[in-house]
Image (cartoon, rainbow, N blue to C red):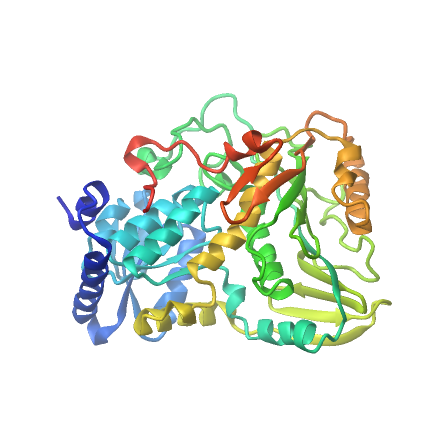
Length: 489
């Protein structure tokens, strides 16, 4: 039995012994790799896995030594492209002595189990966002990283942008715009339907479907395409909230809250999957109010066009003097607004006149370099997006998805009762109602769901009080026996 399997199934190593063994294994692997380069193993060779592989291949002091994907064609092609050992089963990659650090670029449902297995195999880990498919399993990754003393970075690469520090100084130290009133995140980017088949989608040849499903249920698929569209299936993905929402909400936590808030105290979510009648089940319209105990945060997500026969995303200037970013966030202050998005941002006054512009750096290269530096130094505090930071930012998305899934019929009175003083939330709801009307969808239609006002305890990471039972059942999934995310003590 391999070292990985012994540790996973027997749990024989105590934490101190495991940490020492991990360090020894890392040193041994680096001595095997040429020029003492850090050997990188990449799990998941889709579009993002290839992008990350290209980036790490270009990073000084690193080399792609192994790749893995349950799709034999993908793993084989990637092995040739990167001159690396290719595996179909990620467990074989984790047993490869040349692998020092693992990049997890799998489907969302595999992120946590792959990361934990890698940690238990003595590897450092770079795991793509969102960290987790459910809040409970994200907590287990944090515990595993601490127990085994591993370096774990999350792929929210904007955290490595130098302009982030400049923006925080502008907003918080200089108080250039005054007191923060609220924050609003947006992802208003059109997508297309995934289709809906009458018969199950044949699994493409060369894919180990049991391995591909891993912790998820091994369900029949009724969408048109096998790859990528797993994002919009609750069994394997996290919808647009976990796909792009995690980036913009992580920015809000970092820029507006300076990470002082882990997760919200109350949430109200509404939306639906409308207009397309396809095989996916995550919402293509998803609006959420987050009560943090300080200033509120709102998020507006839509994958619909402006109208059925009109291209382009939904409007972003609701209540603002200028257009907000369609993929970004707004920090609304007493004296103006900061409008942030990937790679750039600007501050405007109450009339929309620009006060200051911000320009970003090469976040992809910087984020990978930050991870590699931490692998060498063994200082997890130097990471820009350490696993616990990623766990909390992902938590906002997980809780927003729980709200939608625990929802029932839309209730206009309840929708506005969460904060009667917050005009922006009322404007957003009216905007959503207006945009849905162009698709002949009313808020009273059965496709639209709204959660009750849910109370969440950031310390216990569970819902409490009225309606808690309807929400807590989504905090941890049912795992298949061979692929159970372990509870880390």
